[in-house]
Length: 405
Ligand code: ADP
Image (cartoon, rainbow, N blue to C red; front, side):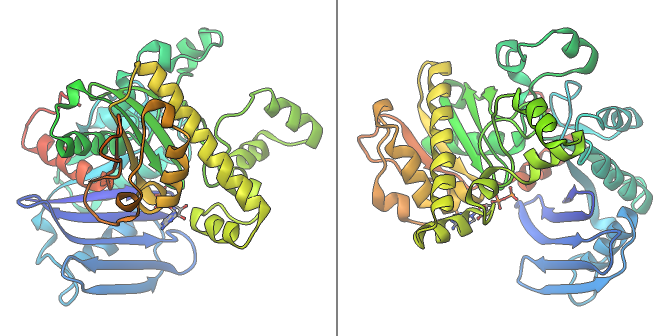
């Protein structure tokens, strides 16, 4: 059974086609600059064939048509007919309190996603556009939605409530939701498998460190607390996002600099984090290179990133009253031995000790990087959100229950 996974953004659409008999990726690609001049499309197949093209793609429906044209391309495609796609799974950023696990798309589900537009104005409208486009181009093909927030719906109120008047929660659902849930869920399961121990018995902290970054305290396989909040702005310092800050800064800076709501929001989301402190880039590789050239801003940005993450790891170890495994994933977490080393060298009090050679070794498989005498297992587990979405979609269309998620 072939499952197509789609991640629709406001001007982009990324996709991966899985053959679920062996969970192999048949093809993956992306359409960029939807609705802008010169849209770019790119696709590569599992057997290494690549195709790219520049054309005018005005909306998500046209993007879905283009994607299907590439997937069925006589030379560069992998399908003889779009009818070979059994189901489509979509990544949806915000599921609010309505969605505690993945579901099949129905008119009611679409209404719910629409009702969450206010909470995720940049993401949910684009996801819905993607769902509608598939409905139009592939009528009758079942679709599922997998939410970034769903995994964190197990958080207790002590974790998810803000200490502000509760009327704001009742009226406007202002609370912490958490994101990257599909990734935290996936890597925690893989980590337990790797360790050969039941997830239900483990206290784990998963650190998803990409352009966006979050870490999650996972107690017995369930999200107990996570660093992102009502939006993905809270928590760790990120590429261009501030992470935690004193909320009084917002009205103060708005008054002093005469900023609008849009401007302050854009400042905190797009012009803060590593980018603001280094003054050069929000990309960790560029920060590391600049640091090696002696750039002081890059050094401070790096040190702050590490320090803030270490504080969260300490806090979550206390929150769970212990820690069995610390897991690194995503672009920075999987690829930067230096960051992992810097983070862990300040955590010796918890019994965390890295093995330098294991930490330096690269691999696409889950691996242990802690020393044999480390009290806490430290692992690198490559994330795979697309596979998780494909698995959920597969389970839903076969009628298998996903109630454990
Ligand atoms: P996204 O959140 O967009 O999915 P990724 O998970 O791909 O992002 O992570 C992107 C981040 O990973 C960037 O900051 C990039 O510099 C960083 N990164 C990728 N490879 C390395 C590396 N070898 N060393 C350090 N950072 C890296």
